[in-house]
Amino acid sequence: MRGANARTGVKTQEPQISQITQIVELDADKSAPGSAKIFRSDYDMDKLSVTIITLNEEKRIRDALESVKWADEIIVVDSGSKDKTIDICKEYTNKVFFNPWTGINAQKTFTQNLATGDWLLNIDADERVSAALQAEIQAVLKKTDCDGYSIPRKVYYLGRWIEHSGWYPDYKLRLFKTKKGAWAGHDPHDDVVVNGKIGYLAGDIHHFTYENIEDHVSTINRFTTVAAREYKKRHKKSGLLNLVVRPALTFLKKYVVKQGFRDGLPGFVIAVSSAYYVFLKYAKLWELRHIDGDGDTEER
Image (cartoon, rainbow, N blue to C red; front, side):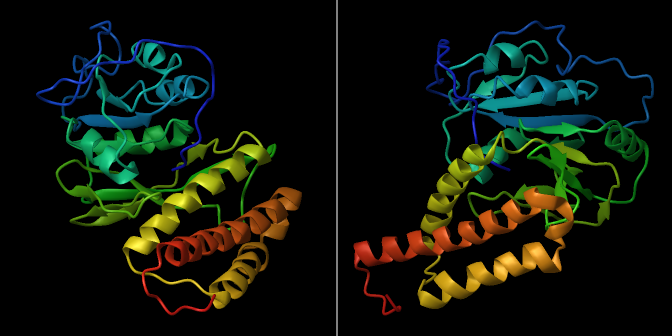
């Protein structure tokens, strides 16, 4: 998931945090879709909760919500939007909460704990559930022997759908039994661990991840800062080998092994930016360790 946000100057009243529970359920139309009161035509189907975390996503959140409005329950946890994100979310669900940002995995764990459904589907504000995926999920809710499902994610980037470059099918474990899964990734990347059998679905999550190259580079800068800090916590080291060899290997993997050349010029941009991501991550890690003076003996 990525953390790029819609940047606007629109100001809305920031929700107040309850001193007791640290969450606020914002006012909404009680008849809104995504609230608990949904009449099912098939009572043998398990209940599905959809969870989304947001921050200043007014440009993209409506399409995300439209793609999952068929679910029994939609839960949105916002970390302090200043634009119209909350107002838009309230059109689709009365389960809109505020929680201060503590990292992507912690935030998604917080959101999961609010879900009441048998199954949980997590999407990000820049993602959409395709019609084919919706049909598959509804079939799963009727009958399955699995406890979780990995879903292919297809990215729309620089005017085209990316079919290679290591970006597709990019399976993500996003659908799982609520009581069987747990978020266990390392920020800034999320990951789910499921205690049980994992299956695979064919329908795509459509991912509208970057508005343009500037947005992509901005995201790389933010993510590499978080990743470098995480690496430092885990006592990883950085040196000339990581700064030179790893980026080069990343480019070859994306462009040659993963056939990024078949994605045209966007595939080349992906390969170069992926190499840059790796370089910047290890350069920032070196900077953190060097400036902090923690006694490491890595090559400088």
